[in-house]
Image 1 (cartoon, one colour):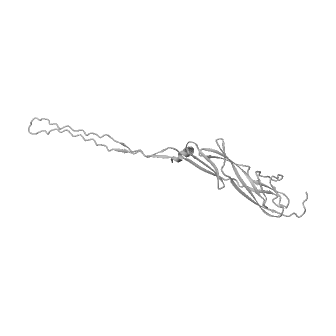
Image 2 (image 1 turned 30 degrees about the horizontal axis):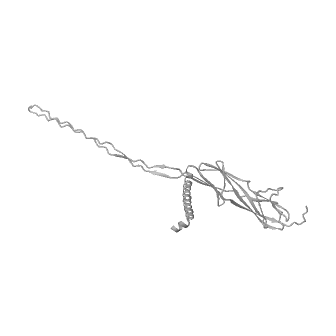
Image 3 (image 1 turned 90 degrees about the horizontal axis):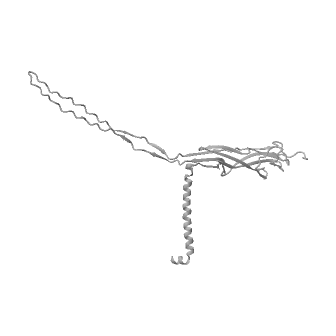
Length: 268
């Protein structure tokens, strides 16, 4: 050990600094965990995320700890009553008379006071709440839209078909949870698959004719399975602060399109 210290003094100091640094990191992590544990006692902890195709809104506030206090019964005692002593009977001298003699007068003995029983008054259990725990969880479903297209009948080869999504431009919801108000806003983006191996990604919803924001031309007659994947993402706002919603929600819509051959040449 002495040779190690003599030959590598710089390395030894480096190890000491590293150990000190690890100690402070571990201490700060423990403190941060404790801080996070008590964050929800005075202020609400809120979170909005996606799960199983739904918007999940969670809220938690308070420690939820409660102590049951059972005080000892209060015994109410009545002081004992002392029994009064009766005076000794007094004998009055009576002059001798003939022929009758007078019996001596004996004073009545007073009745002793009855000692009352001790009454124990029991105080019921008291629930002392050190913090009320409020937990709530809400789930919201997003709308599922259908695929619309023109023309719905008589679609021909080499003639563009116009598509659009029958969905709202955005989804909004105002939610009240554990006494807090949250605004949720989500918007979709789209991935179209026209059934012939062609894909188209866009944030536009499309519209009927004369709009051609989303359109496709088929080169061969047949029946095509058209799918539209709507991917929803957005933000939630609380007390004027906006945050991104964790995760996304994907919704599929399907339509069957039949394309026929033109019987006569099409001229522009």
